[in-house]
Structure formats: C-alpha cells, structure tokens
Length: 114
Image (cartoon, rainbow, N blue to C red; front, top):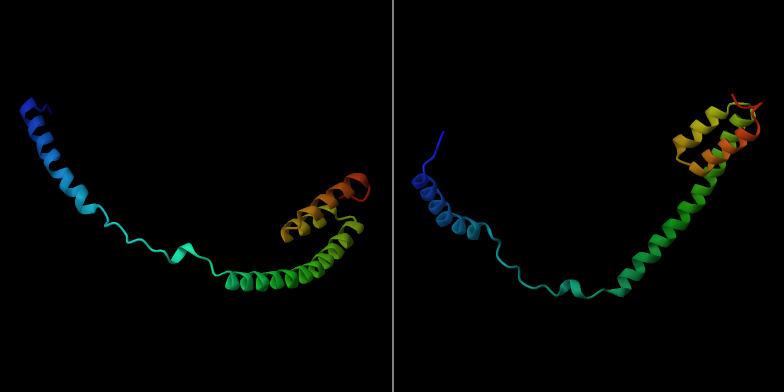
C-alpha cells in the first residue's frame, strides 16, 4: 500500500499535535520534598545491631554442632569406602569445604574410593 505525500504530512501534523498532550497527561506530579529520611536514629540502629549480633552468635553455636554431626556422618561413609556417598551428602548439606576435603581424601586413598 502506497501513501502519498499529503497523507503522510497530515499524519505527522496530527501526531505532532497530539503527542505533547498525551505526554503531559502521563507525567507524574513532582513529589514534595520529604526530610524524614535524612536523619538516622542511632539508638534504635545500635539496638537492632546488637540483637542481630546475638542471633548470629546463637546460630553459629548451633551451626557448629550441626557441622560436627554432618562431618561425623560423612566421615563414617568415607571410612566405609563410600566416597561418592560422602561427597553427595556434604554437597546436599551445602558444606562445600567438606566436599573438597572428601575429594582430597579420596584422591589420596584410591583403594577406599568406590
């Protein structure tokens, strides 16, 4: 379909006339300046930090016990000759340093690796 020059000019003039009105209708109103976010309440921030630190320490103690239990279970598997099972269990638990330790141990003891 071919358009002639007059139709194209009409279309462009119509678009030029309508687009500024559409653009101004969609523009959001400028937000009022809010100064509430400029200052920090250091007392509440410090209290929240101390509470988070206490939770982190409790989780670290619990995590250390869980890591020891996982290490014991993986160690039993590897000692029984199931290196793949030990590596799989450590990987599923997300303990990648333990995965690396199992791999290194099993490389050094190929007779026990299955």
